Image 1 (cartoon, one colour):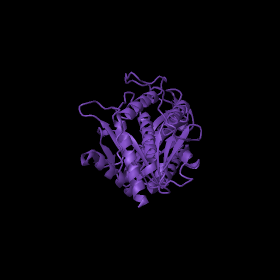
Image 2: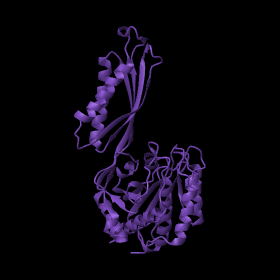
Image 3: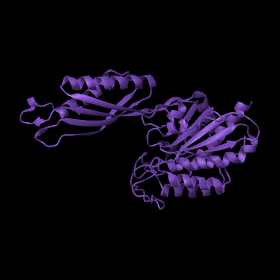
Image 4: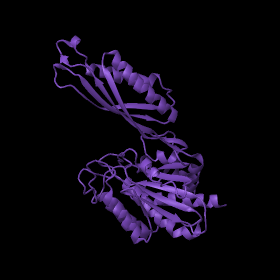
Length: 393
């Protein structure tokens, strides 16, 4: 197997790329300059690409030893509406927008992987499709790219993705078979009552009072109607209603998310939640409108593809670098849309350094040691080369 170690010259170039991306973050589906910058790097490397949608890009590295497997790698390129507070000399110049989830790192890692695989293309058969995906922080972005054909022509056989992870030691790689992230659906519940004077509540229908029963019922649904070994989270994150302290509120709006690891459970709880809310509100004399938006599915890792990453990590860095994650995250990632179509694996790249404070994802002080970029590139590159070699035998 070829030497996939990142050279010092390439690493220095990649650090400059990452810092540029970090300084100019853009929100979901508005990554125009980010996409332009990625194209400029690819053009400087004389590597061809295709635009998908307004800001998405794909790069096909075609092996010169003939036909073979077709493997995809995805990186997300969007940022978050967060005001950066890291104090870094290359902190965000776009007010109120920040790469607080490490997508600048993911994008840089995939660019480095493109560079490495392009260098090896004379030595493998098959094809690698590198997908620079917009809008991961918004719903539907991966699904849109799939509908735009990124898994076809020719058909992608397997997929890989990674995420920086502040919950395992720096330089380790976290892997897990089966579910590794949850599905994430969004809902809005509008409770309609009848306004009136607070001195005469019997002449009104109090939407606020009804909403408290709805919240309790949703908690009951999670705790008492769901198998506890298949976790479900129903979270109300926003609630509004009422106009004055002495007026009975005639309307309350609640917004939240439903998260699950099991597809059948997700469907069942969704249906039960809608039924429960409508029946409960009606029992108190009100009416309920439940607007439910299916989000991205859970990321379910394929055992065979995950095993290749495990073997790659041990070959590159030894057994001690491999962390077998004991439990999934109830956070979400729309990579689940890819994993639902083709065998895939999504692994964690540890950034937690000993005796140093490590901020979580989506925190205004989130940052990472850039040496992790080379590790991500090496794991991607060798994993892909190993799979192409295996499929070519």
